[in-house]
Image (cartoon, rainbow, N blue to C red; front, side, top):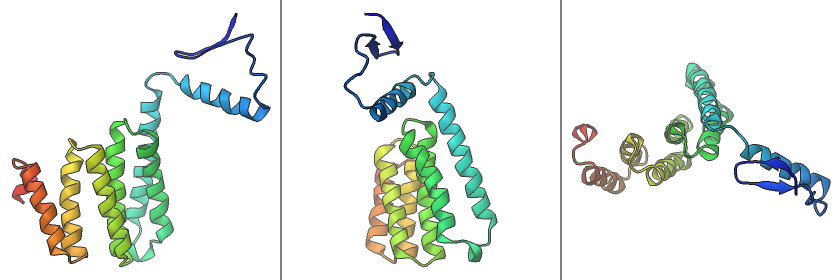
Length: 178
């Protein structure tokens, strides 16, 4: 039949007017179809915009005295970065967003003397290393994990394990010389 909606991969014929879907499901389907029609490169632009928004929020947080910061302040910034890494995982900004989230968890953990947040920082860095193993951020994440274990959590065994893994994984890295 005649085509009434044509997208790169999806074609719906006029004789299949989605009679079997409720009105609310039709709206959801229409929204899904429109999201698939986003022009090539637009997602890249959206991820850049979201990342820049998160960076501005981060700069505002950094401008506040640490004694004036709240957990909610940190959460708002982390949520902005999380949107980038979750919604645009293929974007070049996703790995930087994950690194920023790890850094924020570590900072918040230090400010509020919260060992659980320091553990979240380690988990975020581990996730970054698994998702983007060849990025420069992965190298720094591994060192950050070692620093948190050594300086914040006092676990020298795990710190040595992370630093040893770094030296084995990146034997020629200039970061290893430090």
